[in-house]
Image (cartoon, rainbow, N blue to C red; front, side, top):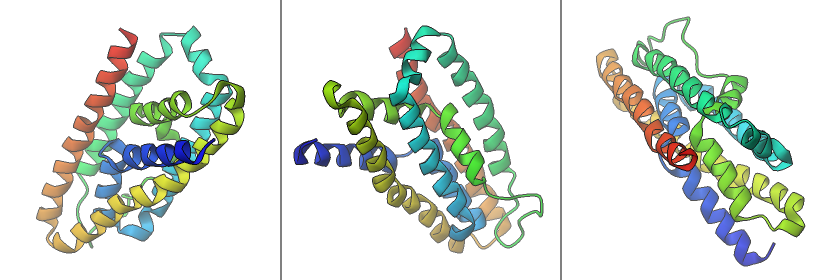
Amino acid sequence: MSHEVLLALAIFCIVATITPGPNNMMLLSSGATFGFRRTLPHIFGISAGCFVMRILLGLGLAGFIDRLPWLFPLLEVVTAVYLCWLAWGIATSVGVGAVSPRAKPLSFLNAAAFQWVNPKAWAISLGAMTGFSRPDHFLSDMMVSAVMLVICGIPCIMLWAGGGTIVRHLLTRPAMLRTFNIGMAVLLVVSLIPGLADVASAYS
């Protein structure tokens, strides 16, 4: 892979991971509610989940899904249901300094598993695989793009959790954080729409 292609891949990974989407909306809310340190497992879970997805897609999962066209629409439904559940949890968070004992940030494993029902994660993985892999060097290029996605992605998504931490200090009253979290819950659901629209157009 040439230096020019590596640079283009890095730009792709930065733009893909720093722009708004379900993961970043969740990280922003988690940083505001639980703080940056408690959101770290969520951050690394996203990166690990995307890395594993990228490898498995490159090893043939994409072809498996092509043979079962009903599988991806099913993922869309599961995504919508799961996001609504997450959005409800975000909207009903009680606030900074008064977080319910039952409330906790998304775990490493849950964040990793969420990538499999996140259309944006699928789009990023498929885009990197199809746009930056040479047929005669497919496996090596696939590994390079997977590693690049992690290297570029972690700092980008950390910015969203850090932004939530900054907002956390501004939202000192529970009512203010409740309003913020309701807004984040709405944006979480709305952020799914462009990805679903792209998937629908691709499969129509």
